[in-house]
Length: 77
Image 1 (cartoon, one colour):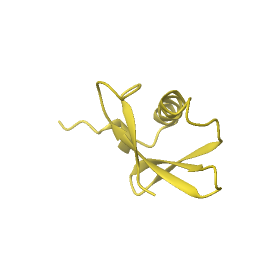
Image 2: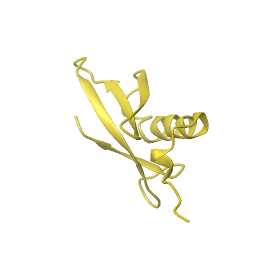
Image 3: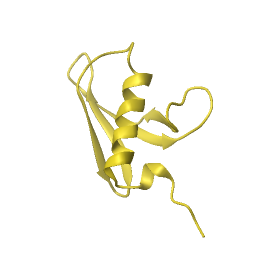
């Protein structure tokens, strides 16, 4: 039986974990508002940078250094 990766599960509990992990990993960088979006079977984080340009982060399932609550984030745009 296959287990789905948390970043591919569209449930409120997973979204809350992703939001908490993103806040913890990016706490020092900025306190800008951000949105989580489930699209194309995966979670994304959208944030405006200091120049008001949209930055997109891919929520990835991870463990070990650089991860929080089972997630890490890769900037993709």
